[in-house]
Length: 139
Image (cartoon, rainbow, N blue to C red; front, side):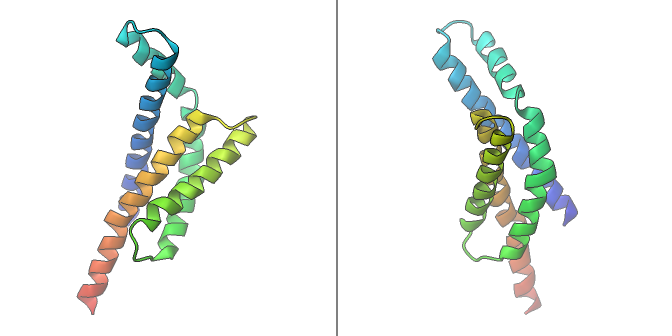
């Protein structure tokens, strides 16, 4: 169980980083004239790295344990409920983290919300389906 939760946490955070990088690259491409794509990627990586520390701290110390406790106790039959609940929690955490830093930071939001979406989806696929299969086999 612990291995599954750690795998889900790290994988979903990596997916959140990828989505944040794509959004930062789109932002950079809208601000800077077309030119060298390597410069775009370097600027996007620089822009995304600004919130990576606080995002990782918030995600692994607050969001992942909170999502673990919340999703463990839900036991819903509807699979879409898990990603939506996780996204709601991380929207609140990113708003709180943004207010803590002096204003809502779209880069923190772009990191936390996709990470939560993937966390909720993988929770359903790895934990809840295994739990329901075990319950059916035990019955």
